Every structure is written in structure tokens, then in C-alpha cells.
Length: 135
Image 1 (cartoon, rainbow, N blue to C red):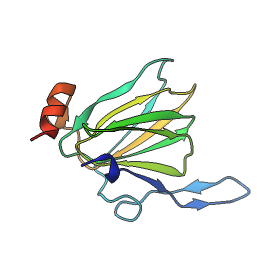
Image 2: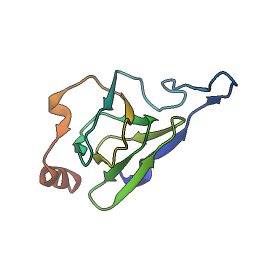
Image 3: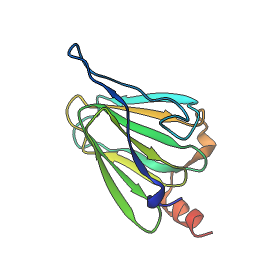
């Protein structure tokens, strides 16, 4: 997979004077079945998250509150995506190195994953990642 396979997905917005609502449905808004959901919060200033790639897992990342950047790398080019709206999801296909940074105070990142947690699915060494991309 390459940076060209990444997508910003505009999620449905249901506007209401009592408060707005957005939804994500598997295969409707994102191209995979949701097997795992997790969220990242209380990230201290200056910290980064991620720093790995997945062999099989795909993800959709949403900034439910606040803002942060997702830096994606396909081994040839890097692209930074700034997320700050709860009605946009970032689709990240398998095989891309990812890092999350520049978290604002009280930011909340929701991550929807296509696979259950499997430590063997991770590539945590950047050199190993680059080797895997050049096969």
C-alpha cells in the first residue's frame, strides 16, 4: 500500500439544534469490518504515539475531541494529516508506518481496527519496515 491509498472520509453529519451526531458503519463508511475499537487520550504535551506499521490491520482514525497529526510513511514518501473534526475519519490501509503527534490538550482519538490485537501483526522497527516495503 502507498500514501495514495489513504483516504480522508467525510462521515455523515446529522445536524440538530440539540447537538450534532455523526456515525461510522462498517463497509458503509469504512472499507472493512470493525474487529477492535480503542481510543487514545491524556497524551502529555510533546509525546508521540504509534511508531509502527501493521502487516494486515487497517484502521480508521477520528479526532473526537481536540486535534492531532497523523504522519504516514509508505517507505518512499511521507504525508501528514491534521485531524481536528469529529466528522472526518482517516482511513489508513495496512503496510504504512504511522505516528501520531502534536496532540492538543484534552484531545481524544478514536481508532477503529480491522483485526483483533495481535502483537505479531506489528512492525516496530523502522529499518525492518523499509526492508519489508522493498521486497
